Length: 419
Image (tube, rainbow, N blue to C red; front, side):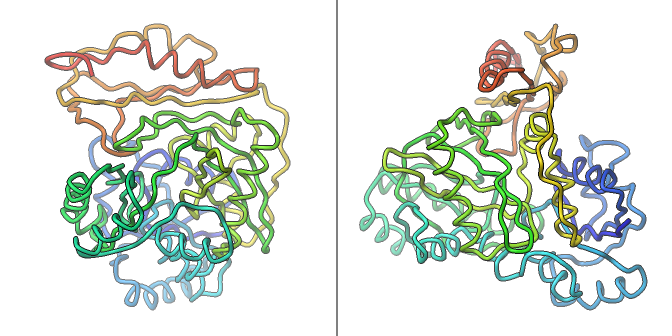
């Protein structure tokens, strides 16, 4: 049994899945946060699984220089076998702690590069990983100049946010200015960390998007599978559903997976699970981004339902120096999918219809619906959904159609109309 240190967490599904993965692996954990109240807000699970930690420590997790000596003292007293987080904004800090304590985990430089969309582009381009033409700039004049060189349409994104926040397509200078101003209006992220003022502009690439779920241990990367991703489309690129495994030919699946592995290796990631997004264009695969942690948005659950491989538990084993078991086992599912209800208007939920039979449908293994009285805002990223449904099918490629049809039948009524 190992003792892990968890530094902060998301408050969504991964804040439940990761503690469970630690427990299922026969380990225990202590939790370190700058603000315990962040995890006790209305709408979070009660009691929160993070509170099952052996210990809860409070320190300023946004000050890495001060945090390292504090964690050294904790390590002397409690003895940690690994350190991890589910929150993207603390991945570099966790890597720094692991290095400082001599624990397993990806190096800080590799994690910082993966969490910086511009650095990822630079490093991967240098070794020939296919990706869109891009530029990074800070002032409006520099950004407009970059746009003139690259040519519209473009995708604009901050280099250091996640969940699709402020990522959008722009087709002219006016839209570009508006997008950049929205990014500039968010100078501090949700965890109180000051953001970089740099903006990444990229040529907009066309084609279906996929994610590749990989595990890297001792310098060897294993592809667990490829996930089909559905997006709502421009101007924002909101994820509206996923299916595992993706319904691809062997040739296309191999090409997408090889691109992801090449990106992970170029960044030098090790002792981690990664979630890498790739678009399949008419010219072949094109790297979108690399996330050095297990996938969110219930993708890890899709993988587990089909392959029996729990990527949260695998991640725990990887960061604690173990050798995860990655052999798929027989399950009842040939495919699994999740579909999200994406709100496009504001209001307060008055009634939910179309889901009367969901609780008794054996194909539906999980669902979440909004409660009457819930306040709704139009979705601008992957952090705001009305609800979701997760299904399995015996047949490969079928679960996505089922999940999409169920969400299409769902009616969420707001004061003044339907979402």
